[in-house]
Length: 268
Image (cartoon, rainbow, N blue to C red; front, side):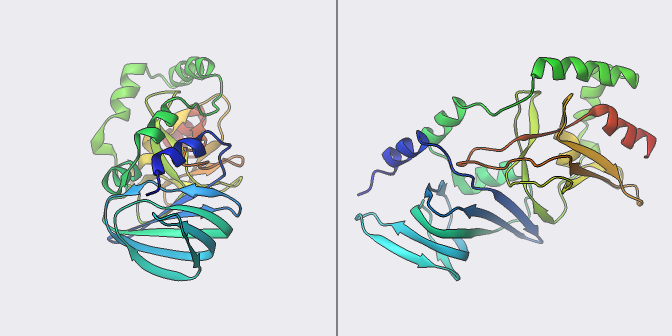
């Protein structure tokens, strides 16, 4: 029997490969799509339910419990039982896990369908993501909201107002909400985002999506808010933003609240 925990611990000690993840939502369906680069050894989280797997591209060698290898070649579709996979990627793979659900909150989806090991969670707790000087960001945050006549308590009450929040609509997303070293919760890239790429809608019919609710402030933002002709507000990248590497979230997505508030309050 393969000791998956020991393999995972050893793999996490090595340099991690870029494995961008895209989240695709439709009516009653969630498709979690990951790109696995050629030459990478990969180990998946434990899936807690049986679900459809779609291998769109590539070739990989799946490690079996008895130490043998099963070669999988795209394209193919099959139902996998609960469990986890260990594989070597011979040719670039695009792999999709398909789940029946109306939930669009990726954090909740991961709680529903994935059981992340203690080894992985310990690794994440000891890891740090590159961020800008957060003390300067916080100081600039206070200056930014003061310029618009707001105080921190008022901003927090507005931010936490659940009557002003809606889920992401159906579509494709390369982001999810996670713990932020800037402030509480933040919006993070899971897939690689190009410069000037649409990240997500931030406000629909006057209500905030997770992109409008959780995108934190920075003096050196990597994204900005843009108002469409219909009044909805969209979040666009200002530069390339890196997605997941080795299962760990990518860069935190940030905006300058001066620019965001000007768009929201001024309508431009």
